[in-house]
Image (cartoon, rainbow, N blue to C red; front, side):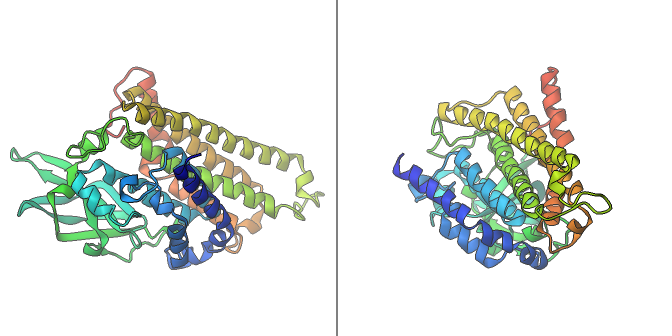
Length: 392
């Protein structure tokens, strides 16, 4: 084990040691509609936000599989903290695709938290050798604590064609609305973010199509570095880790709550003795295990390509979307199964399981991770049809 490997392992160990503190914070996060400051400080101190920072800037440059382990542990401990950590960590990799000048600027502190808005609901206008950015972006998870925003906007070419681009902007130059009032994932602080004539230097604006394809220029870290992942497969891998971690956490909460419980209006005074409950628990456990086994297939695929400096084929990219979407569906079904076995008291707010159930179901509606959308993309590929989306 190298020094860097041991440091990454230490991050994972520290996150595991914080599980009880994160779990206890869940109600507070939901009530304030944002993570407790202490959670962010503890993640920072543990080194979580160094995992995606390139080594040349003092980061840990951890392989995606190691990042996923950390993210799953955070989500297992608390849903909102896990989701926000996933957004910040996965998005902090994207500046490594920007020109060297931008990388040097945003990675200067050796630790980075980035929130993203990839729907191009803003506009970029050339100005003074750079650009002026205006617009608003909804549901930006982690916006209240991020260092930078990675925001998509349309830049009109000389021939009048609007082309989507991505701009890196310090959050100190953005406005955050207090409009996140949600029945699920309430603690993620996924507010609307807006910009009004914000000046963005040219080196912090790149074509979104180049980002998706991994073809951005003016950077020295190209090729077989082990870090040039395929963009959408990378985000599918990171995102799935949060869902699977939440499912694992819900499963553990169910088992912790089971001792001493009976089944009302039946002769069962010990629910664990009921064959129905036994089947429900086994079904949930196996669905989570199946999802985690699927996860290993895409983690191996994207890392092998990054190590070789090659790009996954369209078919491989579609398969990652399909498999990740299927794994997320399995995680959701597992928690639904346990919810049905939990009795009416599970709806009380002092029972943490209900928050895991609500948050997982709500987050499963995220467009990039939606089950049917991803199965359609995968199915088209299997049948020899074009994927009908650039998000591969």
